[in-house]
Length: 110
Image 1 (tube, rainbow, N blue to C red):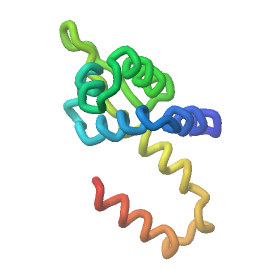
Image 2: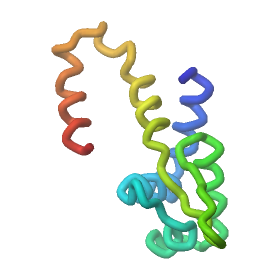
Image 3: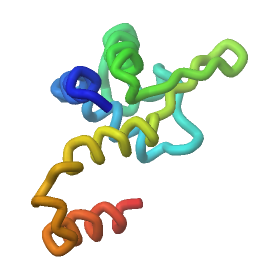
Image 4: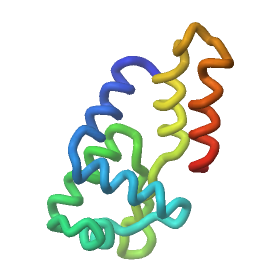
């Protein structure tokens, strides 16, 4: 991941409804959710949520898969992993002792 891709991903998450939608999709991995269900669960108008999901999709954090008449949205965990690694790659002078708490915390959630 380069700086521009990281900025796109971080920028897409810098709005409350988009961040909530992404976190919701992460919680519903691997099955994903249709846009209408995301909108309902977050109490956001459906057309607004479609716009938000499109922004997340263009940033590469969300994938859309057509299933019949529905489009199911999925968090792209590989892209999230790439973003996280980009953010910490040069962290702490590559000292394992300094990065171990971060790795342990991330391991608990997955």
